[in-house]
Image 1: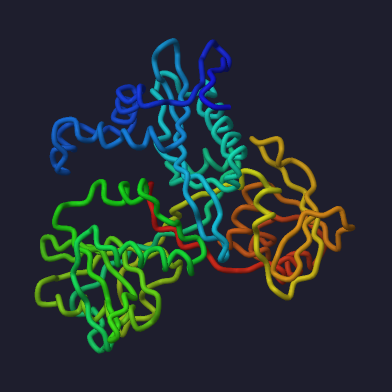
Image 2: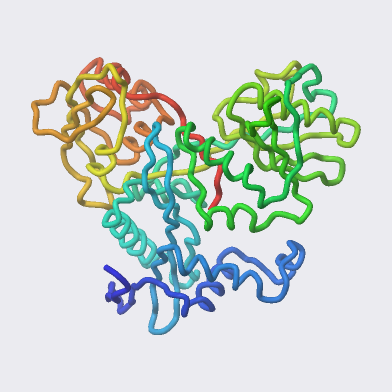
Length: 406
């Protein structure tokens, strides 16, 4: 579609934004998310830095805007990224900067922008879209579904594991350290659901961090980087922004490093995206943990998604999926998929199994957030008795690790 303009009901114009739209793009963001000059100053931003920091976004992201005359009244941005989906690198889009001036809400503008953006993603073979929802019900009505969790924890200083030992050592490094970014790349390559951070994603990663945020890397006895943590010490609390590790040794080494701070802190607060509680792995598991839905996703093109999807190596079954999509008409219909030898193929072969579901259920099922048996019990999948078990037999089951907030 390029940047061609089009009229969409009531005389509105929809087109892609360019760097020439920076002022209106920034103004709409600031209004919608209620970012004041005082907020920016407290976060360390000076003068017009926040607006200029968004300049690369307009250059590299796909941002669709709705105009009333010459005024930008609504926008929908998609960051092009890559994601590990069961050990295959897949092109996806991360939706952000969704905003509309309140006097234009309820007019169907956001639905138009969403569909236009997803259509553009389809043309670019970005078969999956992600977002951090401000309203789960709203996005569910448009075919999105929860696919990952965020678990927040609070650990008192006396509960920090004290007996963990690792043969390596931890070194504090600069934010720009090459081992740090390479570690994340290695982690992403072996972790289902993890995003491969490009330059734009790394810029967003640091956007609101304070200058004294620290990066610490765990190195093995052979000086190989195996894990890292990003944290901030403030008011006797260690705030852990992110902690990843390639193996158990690195995990233990990072907790040993945290314990080395016990005389400096009263509490450790952090988040984990592994979709499993921290408490079970601790000597004193009586800690405070909270879990909340974090990322929603939706398959953009069912056929494209299945073409790069993996399954159980032992699978050999043809399944017909009857799919309903409330927004994208090309996903409505029956897709016959052959699950064979760890790969998936669209086929005309007669199906061994027939199941029905909507696009949101298919998304959370194929991403591994819910099993077919769980969704069957919730009446989200329809089919013959035993269909859920057969479906689970051919699918891989691992909840996605998604830590990024774009």
